[in-house]
Length: 382
Image 1 (cartoon, one colour):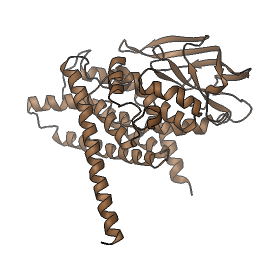
Image 2 (cartoon, helix red, strand yellow):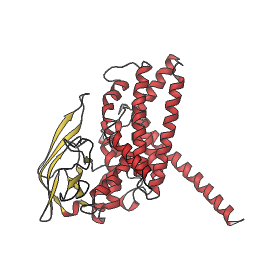
Image 3 (cartoon, rainbow, N blue to C red):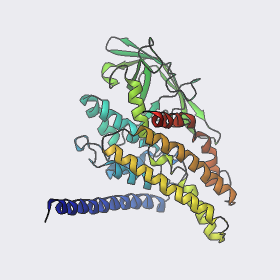
Image 4 (tube, rainbow, N blue to C red):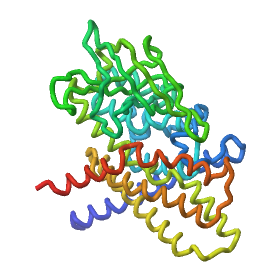
């Protein structure tokens, strides 16, 4: 047998093994969510990764090894690839499961700590995230800054042993429940606005932190405004290199924008709408439904390619921006489709919930014009 033939056989076996492993992982998540549903322990919701907080559910996932699944085994992680995490997150989103407690830490803070954190910071924080003991919020957006993430006015001033932080952050999801915050702050104001930024990990129990609730138009509280007043952040809580925060946060945003939550946030509504059409035997919308399903298949393929890029050690900034832009349009179109087919509504029905959540679709993770700018700049480079 030639070396080429031998390699082909080996690759085929590896592909089969990987496919079987991913299928088993997908089935494991389905069994867990199905058992919780059967016991009435949660109600499927659109936007579950932001709006459905249940620490017990996150800890149940942790017990099954489903948080930090791609992280090194030495920290308690699963040591698997990004495609494995994609399978897990797809199934959780399809089920509308209550995953908000661990989502941000698992999605982007853990990977950021792995890429830029010191060994000491990794040993301190990663096992706690994997156990769902540590809950992270994101201190990025600021009042009056709009969608310009570089317009950071929160200041981190050097003091003995670390920094003193003063400023405000807004739209900070789960800050009222978080044990830790990721914080983007300005450590040097002498250069351009994209320069002099640094990333920190902040303990939310530190003196000088005030969390104020922002209640949305559905009456729910998951957003917050967070005020920092002379908050001491120890030296060892700097994430990466001082002043290199902009490059690091752009890389981190590829993890935030490139996941299936940019495609499947309204999946429970789509499933409900399809069920409604089956019950009514209404086939007038088949063509439009087929187009939505085809778009979903394409977007899922994009998620898969982004996972492959991450497995190759690359931060897929442009691909993630493209996915987020197209995913936002898709999720809004799902809502509009459900409305047109006459899905029954009330304040607690899936359509009403998704509609009330939809204003945030175009903003979180980057406004659409910002995403288009990222893609356009990449296309115009020589």
